[in-house]
Image (tube, rainbow, N blue to C red; front, side):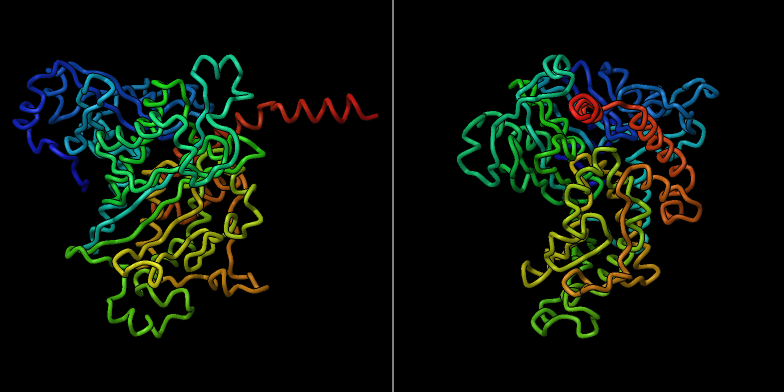
Length: 484
């Protein structure tokens, strides 16, 4: 189900051959927060585990991103189960070498239940595998691309801790979107992100500055969705690793500063059939004839009927899967900051519209083969495997049920917006919507996943509600200390 990396071994003999000059191997799995959790293994132990997997402590699904145990014990890892081992199944198709770590070989793993040998409900790679299999039933393949906007800070782990994560120094001052000159500053760092990504099997289509102090944007080349999710996760690892060399911390926080632009993590999706044809595309003849005559709206004329149903499924289900697209407290501050753009807080769509939550990209702006949807709701803190799982689950559900878009495109909405569903404006509301009985999230992901993932999000909400922020102290000092 995954497009293999270059030189990936197909069997144990090939594995032994590519590791013949190595003594150790690095492995990593992805937890529910998108964090790579891994270790180095001796070559002999790794080869011995290549077929049947190895034990990996389940605590990585029992604690949060700060290694704090969840306040409410969840299904996968808990005291009752003694925080026992999961099975880490090595995926040979993910073979890479890490150039800045003496070219050590590297593989990703997926996490299985030790009793059933099936993916655990909370494994992000397992969730995307499930969605990919569902799409495969139609004879199609999921295709995706991810683009990140992200700040860079001239800081180190020590300096950022001493500053208590406040008053951080941006890599460069000012707003310089698409500046050709600005990348001359810190050019070694800028180019090494691109070059080392390529060395890790992560192709980048474009790499440039975005508006904001020290902000870059990197658009990863589209590929099979499972490979894309791995690439998108590993790109953050590459950027952060390269940054350490230069005393720079790249941040994939959606909105690190209240008075600066926020950072998106936009996702492009399409489907491809067994002949390599884009399922969302019309033929050249159909495009030349003006598109689908039966399309209700002009914005839908240049996409296939299947694409329209896919879009309808995404729009109908978007409010129910928001935590999979915007998984953090901070992510919703990005949406609220852009509230003047109606599409940032609503399930909307439009042809080549960056003011909607789903942008239709189709002829005449691109060739038919490049027809796709851009899901603009996620920020740079997106969890790629879960987001892609959600999008393709919703889309294929839309095709199965022949769901039409519930409203007109943003260009034709007018004053009547009764058909538009609004999106949650904070993580707590988004999680409660996802977890409610009968939600579309429960339908497509299953109850076990929703209960576990929802529990992790409510844990973050609880910690946020208990936190006392600088804003509160400043507001209290101003209103009670300086005003009578």
